[in-house]
Length: 539
Image (cartoon, rainbow, N blue to C red; front, top):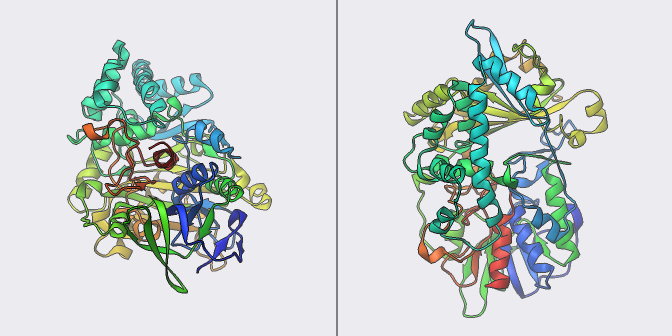
């Protein structure tokens, strides 16, 4: 019947499965684990099915480079949208740390020399001085402060709503009572994001910095009439009410392990190497069929929670599915292990300060307009826009003490304007070319060869791991490589029939979406897992 896991993924022998469960959760990503934990702690009998050999889905960490004791999350890395209420409700032993630097953005000074904008999380005067050095005065600093105030004005209404039934657009709009709130609503909900960015700040590098939050993971542009960029942007800036992205202590595996601890303490059962094959609807229970290395099996479930992509969910329910271009993913992930951080060409900025935050590469506003146009025409963008995150400068615990003492660091690069369509032909060659483009981008910013800073495995190869949208689709069931499963939804109900619901219904009684494809799904949040559990418990 596949492999069972006890606490913290350790394989043990377990008794045979029951024939009937209160709930079967398909997929062991963090949302599925959140749902399972909420249900089990009130006495529900829960089974979690996972097709892969290990639990955790996109939030799992692993020893990516086998020769080194360094544990990286291949797909997800920072936390902004995980509500403290979920941590408190479930008693999770999980914490995050603040990054000293929010972001580092390279730019070219008027004299042609390299500069770097530093936005600090701990020293506003450092941020203001750095921006004045870039722009020549404080006008863009004032504009940036106003832009952040708009974000926070809307977040004050949006953030508290995620763990409650959906409200209507009209309800949200009518709650905007101040001039600042009404401007925020107009800027981020009614008009294309680029309109506000171009109106409020002027420097190209700063405009690009603000726009990246509207592009991470999706293929869009500032003036996109679908407002996909606005929806993506809001998921990146409303978390916690201030949008700060924090570092998970111990890496993403610490979240998975803590959720598993809670699940095991309440009797949740797990089966890995178990691929769900169908959900057959019944009057009182559904038959959930799955396949393991020992053959085909089935159990009955009163409720089924699908922490899976739209394509897999449709297949399980016997429904038609066709890829929607609007849901296309656009991402490259590159994990790296370094012997040391590279020095930078920009003067007055240390590597430790720059890499402690989101390190932007070729993400100027004009550059990204050009990269979007290239990708739209079927060409790999050159230069290739992306941003880098260093976990270990804030939390070295994902490294062995020996590696940490020797100065090793982990980097994760997240590439933009790399839509799924670009890799449909000549996949492997294009993946290699994209890697070379990003290494070239880093070389332009670093004083010396970036490649020389990388650790090497026993064969002498650099410690690099790259994932395209196709890789992400194949490995963790994200349709078209979309990290949101499909296009991000608004925080309100777009349809009258969704008002007052949890946004998790599939149209099949007692079968609910418990993952990123639920309304208000996406990112490392646990929100759809919580909401699916509430749909079971509260109706």
